Length: 385
Image (cartoon, one colour):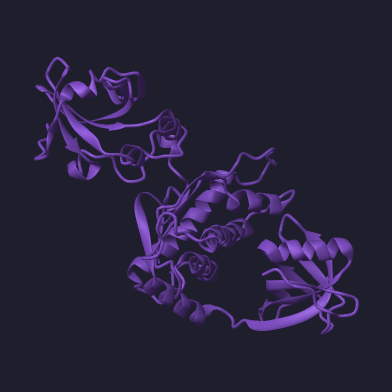
């Protein structure tokens, strides 16, 4: 099918012959390739329409860095073509350019333009993409706290689901290493128009223990859990997800939905972990639904503040044992981020600490919010939050 646009025509001679220099994708001929214009400037050329009487190409100026990023999966096809203004170039049956018009991707019919987020090669499709958006989230205006929050919350959500997926398996060796490999995923790319973080598949294991489920199986279970929660949020036909263990799924969703206040108003979740073609859009309405569901089924947490000595620090699990505790009860503490760094310093130097966090009734487990080192004289040093 040929494409007709009602836009300004330009001198087709300036664009050159469209002879391929570097073919990036081929199917019955070059579909995406680089070429050179009449001044030898690099062009990126995308076949967007064809028929017996010729073809139509969307052509944009490009650079070697952009082409490399496209081939390495750091840039998808649509973003590579949408970085600049361009032309719609039509060719005659013999393949030579016959005329050209000023064009942008938005000018093309939807069926002719590449889909959003699709990489050059199928094996480059991200495992998980988290995109934050809001009226005040724009390129050059994304604060460091937003970047950190996006990464931290993504990790916490995946950790909760990975832990649930592994609980039912007989894990041999070091379960913490298995867990970390699933939730601490490699970052393929970060984008700052709004803010988007793209995660790839788990890094290969250095060794595989016989009898253990493969990473693929564990990721599959994480995918099933996460998708069940996201699907529930789409219609909310029940008070909470209809699965055997809804609590960890809701706790994971609580990390992904946008907060009630602040610059992040919407979160888009996509990637092969949830769907190859669908993007789930989470709003503050969904945040309220998750909070309501958690209040229905989750045990009430109690705020706690205790002091003691850090013992048995587990770097893999990011947790520690608190002994000589001010209320006489030994605690198992789960800790993240800078609070973990502070706890490790206290552990290595035998300092006492003040721990603030939440404790589940009937347990001695604390989800740590802050850790502050205290001196022997009980003067609290500045805490890292």
